[in-house]
Amino acid sequence: MRNSSQLIRSGLIALVTVLSLSAHAAQKEWTMLVFLNGNNNLDSFGTTNLKQMETVGSTGDINVVVQWASEATDTTKRMLIQKSTGGGVSSPVVQSLPRIDMGDYQQLVEFVRWGVANYPAKHYFIDIWNHGGGWHRSANGGMLLKPLDISYDELSGHSITTPQLGIALAEAAKIIGHKVDLYASDACLMAMGEIAFEVADSVEVFAGSEETEPGRGWPYDTFLKRWIKNAKASAVEVGKMLTEEYTQSYIDQHDGDVTYSVFDLSKIDQLVTSVKAMATSIAKLSPSDARTMATAAGRAQGFAYSDYVDFGDFLAQAQATRSNAIPTDVLNNAKSALSNVVIEAKNTSRYSKATGLSLWIPLESYTYSEHSEKYGELKFDKATSWGDAVKNLSSNAR
Image (cartoon, rainbow, N blue to C red; front, side, top):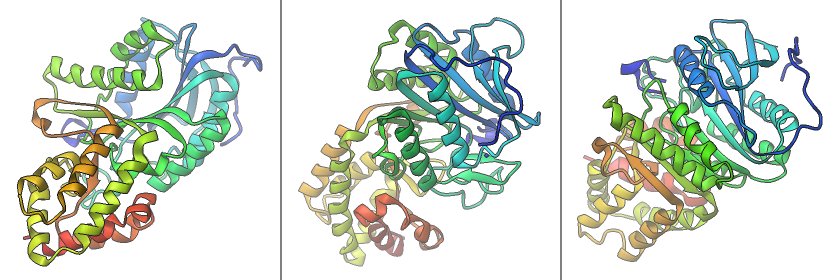
């Protein structure tokens, strides 16, 4: 989800083709595919962000292509964003679809298939714009009845779960012919190890926010203005631009506290191996030592969902206990692996302890029990047995 205090932020056959599409479109450096799901209370911010995109528009090197769903209309629009200074969204509607379920991961796949066929590029950036809830739904529901993982469609009641996101991006990589160069979420709480590992076989570079995002999300105008000056930038460089422009926009406007970070998924196996070693140690801790580590987790940087904890700060807090409950080499290996995965992390001052990647660390038995079955379905838990570790921590936390 995006922050509720600021109004925080499925293929069907086309009915109308407004503009003809060239089957032999020239290949550009990049195509950015924005899956903009406004079928919820973020709808007005979708218009705002589209107008920001139109301050720059597509260029000779970069296609900016959007699938825009709005709860205010029965149609879903596919658009090639063009530069415009008019009052409303004026980019050409290349294809008009009936209202579709933006919470259906297969619709994301179909959008990617269409986008790659009609806007070929050397590199692809997939952006999911909507509510996000990390790898699990909110325990209390917040403003939404069930903000499941990402791309909640209020009209259908559906969303894209973390395993479904993994399936969708695997299909996207097959369509593209190589891994997705950059995947990023313009949504809350998505910079999690669990989500990153779910898509790691299909994505080169991953970006997201550990914390909630304010309703207006990314500053598409300043980000695109910077990107078009270096259209041949690598996925890592584009991810860094986004991270820096996003966080700086909130610093400059004194309008919310934010985090954003970029992961090199080619390095994530090392992190997973180190987390597995930690999980083995934690699962075997005595009640007293487990309590000590639970206290360390409770002191670490947390986020809107209290069971999402910054992993780097947890490691620091664990070392600060000087208990040796977790062997020093295990902690040091995890710190080293984390630093290799997180290419860049930027935060406003409220999140000064955040290091870029969060993990699930529930400190209440009922929270563990509520989500443990779903957690066991994730690739991350299957590879690390982290669920066994947090079971011990949650059982012994004060």
